[in-house]
Amino acid sequence: MTSKRFQLESNYSRTLLPLARLWRQAADRALSGMGVSAASGWALVQLGRLGDDARQTDLARELDVTGASLVRVVDQLVAATLVNRRPDEIDGRVTRVYLTQKGLDLFAEIERVFADLRKDMLIGVSDSDLAIAIDVAERLAARFTRQRIVK
Image (cartoon, rainbow, N blue to C red):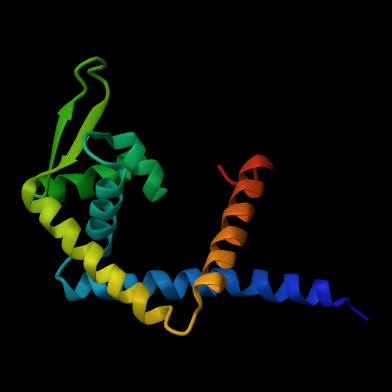
């Protein structure tokens, strides 16, 4: 007979990947509804969250893609006048990317749409339950990182 703790751990871990997938699909649909591809939308979101003048390699890391695969997305964003890039002033091998005003405006709109999505999905979840969920997720992420299970 398995323990209650074992069952809880099993059920919790089994829900994580499907939940992340569902959340990502809902966000991708929201981006699509704004006329933005998922790849471009997530690049804009992460760049906006990283702040001004991020290194292109940092953006790739946040998106969990290789630098080479990010180049095409950044090229598209530059062509759409949403992003600009420039060489780093100190290290010319480093490329810096930043949102243009048009990119900042779109990032703000995406964040508003994502806020509405979060609000809709979290209806009925109390503040205390949400705080516990965040705490558990952060502790798990820290543990995975400490154990070098993730990169």
